[in-house]
Picture 1 (cartoon, rainbow, N blue to C red):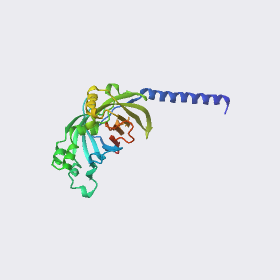
Picture 2: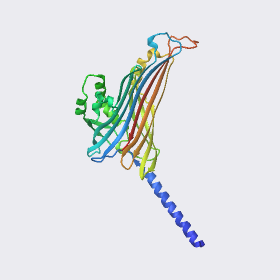
Picture 3: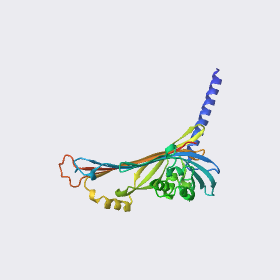
Picture 4: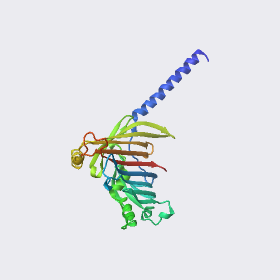
Length: 326
C-alpha cells in the first residue's frame, strides 16, 4: 500500500472511530426512559414467587418448658399469570386483565404444614384453590409501576367463596392490598424524573409490619447500573439497596413493644434487589428483592458472667421474584 493511501486509510479509520465513539457518547447522554409502556391488546406472561417467613430460635441455658421451643411460620406462593392490556388513558395508565394460569401454595404454621397445593397435581383438583385457575381480575397500572386501582375482582372472589381455610387463603390472595402488592412491588421514577443515565438513582419508601416486633420503614434506593444490548434490544440493569428510615411513630411503636427486651437487644438487616427493564418494549424482564432481618435478645434476668445466658433469635424473611416468561 502506497504511503499516501496508507495515510488516507488511517484518516478514514480515525474518522469512523470518532463517529462511532460520538454515537456511543450520544447514546449514553440520552440515557433511558425508566417507565412501563403499554399497548392495547398486548399480552405478557409472568411467573411470580413470593415468600414470607418468621422464625423463633432459643439458645443457651433455658427452662425445660414447651414455651421455649423453636417455631417457624412459612408461606410461599408461585403464580403464573397473563397480563392483557385492555386500554390506556391519556396519562399512560393501563387497564390490565390479569388471568391466573398456574398456582402453587405452601404454608407452615408453628412447625406444622397446614396447606400444600399445586394446581398441576391431579389430587389437588378438588381443592378450593384450584378454582382460582382461569379466574381473572382487572387492575389499573401506572407507568411508574404502581397499581393505582383494583377495578374488579368480583367473579374471582365469588368462585372461591367458602368457609374452609383453603377458601380463606384463596380469598386472601384476591384482597385489594394483596393484589396491589403482587403487581406493584417495583416502583419506577415519577414521569418528570424518569430520564436517567447510568449511575442515576431514585427512591421509594416501603413499610413492613413485623407483628410483635412492630413496623419499620425502609427507603428503597434504586440505581441504574448500566444499559446492555441483548438480541437487538436495550436492557436497563438496576440495583436496589434499602436503608431504614427514621420515622418517629414507628420508633415509638418499637420502643413500647420491645421495652421488656431492652437489655442485650441487637438487630441486623439486609434489604436488596435487582431489576431488568426492556427499554424497547417498556416491559419488566425481571425484578427481585429480598429482606432479611434478625433480632437477638438476651435474657434480661441473666447475670453478668453467665456462660450460657438464654438467647432469643427472631428472624424474618420477605422475598419477591418476578420473571417474564413470554
